[in-house]
Length: 467
Image (cartoon, rainbow, N blue to C red; front, side, top):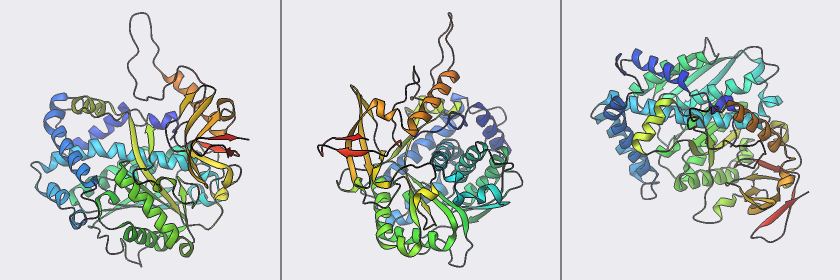
C-alpha cells in the first residue's frame, strides 16, 4: 500500500522527542534516561515487549481462536494486572505497539484519500463541519485514534479547499484504566500537535463482551469508528462478530460515517476478518444500507477464502522512530515494513464511484494487486483480485505505466530519491528504513495498486490484462 513520503516520515526524531516528553510527565521515563539508551531499553522495556509479543502470538494461534479462554482474555488480563512492573508494561506497550498501530491506521485513512474519498460529497463534513466525533474501541493508549488524527491531518493538508481543521470529539473505550488514562492525555497532546486544537477526549473504562452489543442501542452516532488489533483479543465466531459490527454500522454511524477495522496480518486472524466480511455482506448489508468500502472495492465473493491456507493482507513502509530501530536491533524484530489486514465500512447506499471519486471505469474491469509483484521480462506478474475473483496475472510494463497509480508512483519515487541522504567522498550514506527506495523513478506495481479499465484473458493459471 502506497503512502506519501511526508506521512512515512511522521515518526522520526521529532516524534520521539514528543513521546519522551509525555512519558517523563507521566513519571514513566526517568529524567536522566532516554529512549535511545540501550541499557534502559534492555532492562525496562524489551523484557515486556517480548512477553507481550509472545502473548499476542498465542492469542493469534489456531488452537486459541474462538475458545472460551480467548473470550475472557485470561492471559492478557492477568498480565495487565499482575505483571512484575505495571508501569514498565505500559511503557513497553506505549513505545512498541502504539506507533506501529497508529501508522497502520493512518495508512488506511491515506488509502481512503488516495481513492478520492475526501474529495467526495460523502466526506463533506470533514471540510465544512466544526465538530467530528470519533470512537475507538479497545483503545489502549489511543493508537487507532492517533492513526486517524495523523491520516486525517495528511488528507486535509493536501486538500486545496481546507482552511482549518475541525474540532474532534474523541471517545475512547478501554478495559485497562491505567492505559486509558495515558491514552486520554497522550491523544489530546498528539492530536493538538497535528493541528486539531481545542479537541476533547473522553475515556470510558469498560471490558467489551462479544456476546452482547458493544454499545447501548441508545448511544450516540459517530462520524468515525476505529479499532486497532481489537477483534484479535475477542472471542466469538465470525457470525457473532459480524452481528456486532452490523449493530455499530446500523445504530452508531452517522450517514456517510466510516468504520475502520485494522487487524493482524497472520493467516488465522486475516481469514477470520475475511469471514466476517463475507458473513456481513450475506446477512446484513442490505438491511444496513451500508457497504464494505475497502480494500475490496465491492461485495464480490472473497477470492482468498476459496483455499483453506490462503489469506489477504497489506504491507506499508515507514521510517521507524530512532528508538524503535534500536529495539529491533536488540530483539531481532524487523519492522521496516508493517503488515496488517483491514476493512473499511461506510454507512451509505451510494455507488462506490460516488464515494471513491478517484476510481475510473467499471467494477468489472477493475482489479487490485494483493501480492508482491515481480518483473518477468517485458511484463509484471502478481496476484490480483476483482469481481471475478483472485488470479495470477501478467501485464505489459508499458501498460501499467499509463495507470493512475503508476503516475503517482513516479512522483513518489522522485521525492524519495530527493530525500535520500547523499554520499560524499569520505562517508557512506546511512542505511534507510524504507525498502521501497529505488535507484530510478520508473514506476513498479505494489500491493494495493489498481489496474483499471482492463480485461483479463487466457489460461486460468496466469491471465493477461489488456485494454
